Image (cartoon, rainbow, N blue to C red):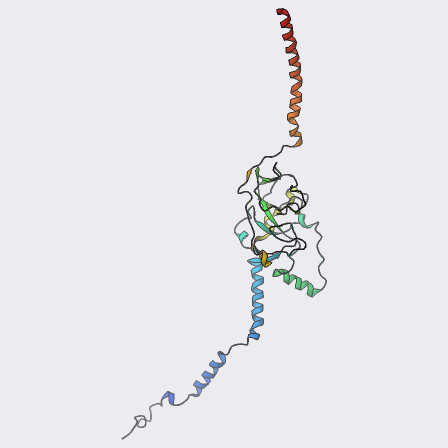
Amino acid sequence: MPLNAAENDPDRPEDEGSKPSDSGGRGSHRRGKASKKRSFWKELPILIVVALVLTILIQQFVAKVYMIPSGSMEATLHGCTGCTGDRILVDRITYDFTEPSPGDVVVFKGPEAWTQNEILAEEPSNVFVKAWRGFGSLIGFAPPDERDFVKRVIATPGQTVQCCDTQNRVVVDGKALDEPYVHWEEGQPQRQADFAPVRVPEGKLWVMGDNRNNSSDSRFQGTGGDTGTIPIANVIGKARIIVLPPGRWGGVTDHNPQLNAQPAVLSAPGWQQGVPLGVGVAAAWPMLFFGRKLGAGLRKAAKRKR
């Protein structure tokens, strides 16, 4: 009598686990190769390249880091001689959906009126130095294009701006601005330079530096007046955050100076200030003449009564 049914049934396949399969062995070998990880040192260059590409794309279309090269925005943004220049993150998306508002700190390409008299640094002759400098600027760790500026928006299209009222405040549409961010350098008079009323043209902005007595801005660029305004199309983005140095990390104030503006008390021009005196002098002569006539008539009447 057979001890095992398999022995009595030659057509029944053997137990799958009893004999190794050649094809199964080869499949297992292939899976082992596929699951083998790349070396970290082989992946590192790829990761670096991907990170740099993403950084460049983000800075070109989303947000970019800029270095502040001058002190015109003290003390909101450091850029003074002898101090560590701030690096700021500039939002490049906001103005795709909205227009710049009063109080916004903006980075913009200087129009011709702003750059025609600028003394620009010479381009390096060494190709590698030039490429490295351009790359550093691209990722925010080198000085930006010297034709880029950073200022605060004071007045927008259609508004009329002038300086100053009797309390030394900038005036927009007849109202004195509330500007807590204005910086006065030690040893300098806390007095702003006067300028005549300017109506901001359509598509333009009137911008000024927070370091009010040390800023070459819309008041002085070009020939002054409306030639000092900047095209909205030239605005690169809005300064949002100070990212370096670590001790200065924080948001950039966008206080709207027009929000709590007060009716301005403007001093009259010199000729108008002299009007009351002129009227007084002109009126004095007839009053003196008629006063004498009246006095003479009263004296005569008194004599007749006697």
